[in-house]
Image (cartoon, rainbow, N blue to C red):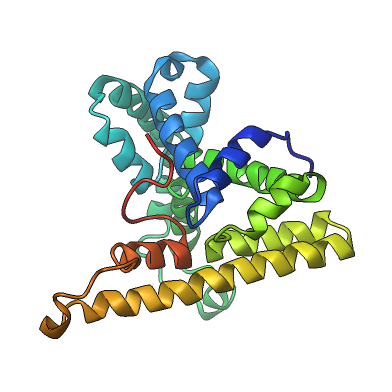
Length: 251
């Protein structure tokens, strides 16, 4: 798959010198999307159709609710509710049809126990999120752009090699995409720089986090914090992607 290249945001994210430029871009786009869906786009037919079909996951429902735009939120949820009820009606009939029936051994062997099919359809109905899809698509686009910059821009290649790399979640994404998109020699060069940056970052992080825990010993109360302050948040974010502490993209 080929993605539209958007190099300026990727450069800006690397220049932030954070733990993961893709986490910074992901969070920035997530915040922009939340504002967009609560803004004028809530009345656009195409947007309403997509929201009606996919809805929002609990995390993104919380982000929408935190914006305190009750009317915009309610308008989206009202139309999504009606569409969900329409799609749910035949599933409920299917579920009710299986009530009170004792499944045979044959049907159980085929996975046909009463309610199983209806339960799976309800999980599918409630397991989608238009914001999650948008965030994933944008992240893949920025990952592709990062690889393109690494291949074609010497200054970016040096900056990335000297950076803290990325979080482990995005490291997996970049390695897989690089293996699919890059020539073998360029892939090995990229993987070497990426692994070295991440290993260096993790090694320092381990020392910082140990220093953080030691500060809770009264005997170390007067010792300087150094870089250990905030190491807990940085460690969590490095291992699983940004979720704690200061926003990775400046407001």
